[in-house]
Image (cartoon, rainbow, N blue to C red; front, side, top):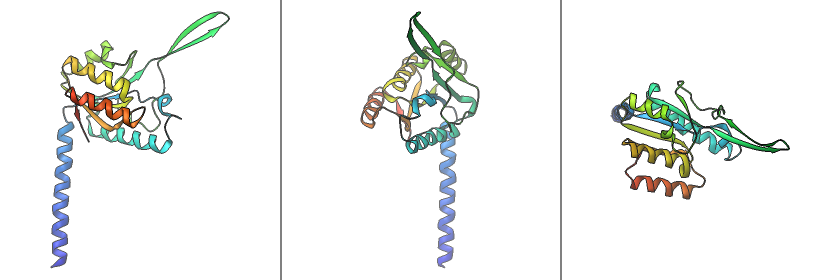
Length: 191
């Protein structure tokens, strides 16, 4: 009798687990994902390897839930200035490597020049052409580009979502404060 109870319990848990996975897939079905500033230069040496590994793993989990065709990767164009006897030179570096271990599932890669990724007219046209309504943001940094891009999406009229464990901040306290401000503006959080 005890064996039957255990089998019944396992059956119920399996059905519940499959149902939960189905609901997760349904939740992400029509959403778009912006993977923001996941560049090696921004992470390497700035956070411990174990924290970077966990963070990138969390981002990859979200990437795995969203239709690969609905994922956009955004890189920041970096400006480097140098001073020499010939004068000041300013160079742009746009082709920075993504973080090691980040899943790249398509070639939807856009370059941004400022904090708000929606200021890139090609990216804005991409979402408009897809008739996107709901956009999830993951990446870095909470206090800067995540905040500016999320606000930019809200201003355009998108329903915006954040995944806190797939977002890095300068410090946990300032990250939480930034996310709370965005929640007060109507952003939803996915745990």
